[in-house]
Image 1 (cartoon, rainbow, N blue to C red):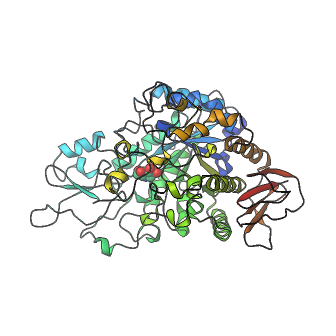
Image 2 (tube, helix red, strand yellow):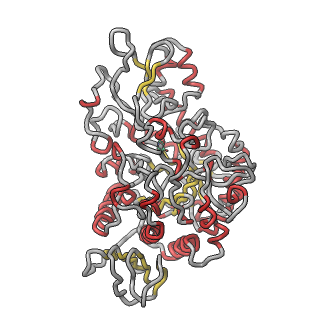
Image 3 (cartoon, rainbow, N blue to C red):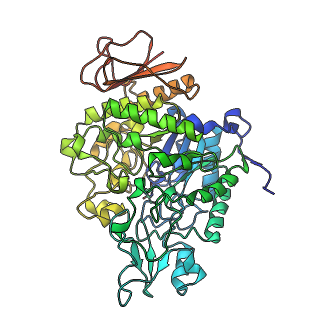
Length: 559
Ligand code: NOJ
């Protein structure tokens, strides 16, 4: 028999909105990269108490939920996505008690909390991996991971020629000569999801955090968990088309049986009231995304299509239409995102010439950065980013925001090599500078130690221009990007209704115009010249109107 439904113990748990099982469907979710958000103890690394200390900032911003990137014990070989222990807090970031206090403070402010769960791989310091290394070939301890003998006469060549997503080989040899699979960094050995013990342990982890009051989970690389490792392993050349076109035929991307795992997760989510939610990070073909987002599975899946689109009305229109249709089919709501901790910030992408940024290998959006600073038009980028965000906030579905985008922050391109942390930089020397540029600690004050991030330094160097973008500066300025985000989120809350959208035909293909029936209209000018606006009260404009007309690269909401 399933256990009885459990109820949160937080002080706010009786409030109606915190108990609404559909809260996630049109939530504005703010991603916190904890190490770079706010540092309460001056060690240069952001922490959970730092998050708690900024709950009033989150309230003023007007978001519905935060998503916390990993805060678990980790050697930070991949920014915390190399987890040593799934049921604890990294001592540099705090304690479980700090976590509980943070949840209570967030819930007290009516803000939900989603945590990142990393099921494809552990860290190489995880007790299971240490045990595997100390155990013989063929042991149960090794079977929790994917160990294979090498090829070649003495087994000194890897079992296959597969590449890791971060560059370099996907296999690492251990001291006794066997090899283990790591689709990401060598410090991230892939788990074997065919073992019941692995499956059960994650169910335990989901309950552990759910019992502590978390409202949902963001599921890292959800499409890679189950693998067909039958030998002989295919060569790189023989692999089914990469990632998004794999359609169930690839040995490790997007296999059909992964959904059996998520059905089990769903039954755990449904033990709680309200049910815990989940959103899949699944780089799969759009046609197959609905499986991850189904109500029997994780319930929602990221759609990175707008993030990868050019600043182009036709592309935006097609993507929005396709995703709304898909969401209707799956029973989920759409997700929209322009920035996260893996991609060049959207203010920068939109300020670079079109050829300077683009989707990375395997369809993931590890966009290139660095060396492009001279080509960057900062004002244009910020202007378009605001217009894009305002458009996104008018769409039905959940909007995912990334810390710092509300300040209009740009990517930090000039991080010295010896300060970089991202494994993609180390595994692709000279080709890809990696993702550190969007992970630089936030500027809270115009001056002072680490721009108010904390009393010590910042674990990634902050550029001098960060001061101009500081929260303190923008709070004083009604025309700042921060003031704009606050107003947009406030209006979205007031206006949000049914998850429906109606297109309004325009004579110019460069104008994207839709209404949320009976609520409000959103119009974006992707063209080069100002256009007349239809009748109606102007609620918000991402840049000032010009003589009552909608200028280029601007979104307006009409009542
Ligand atoms: C996706 C995460 O967003 C990224 O930051 C991480 O490096 C990989 N998964 C591996 O966990």
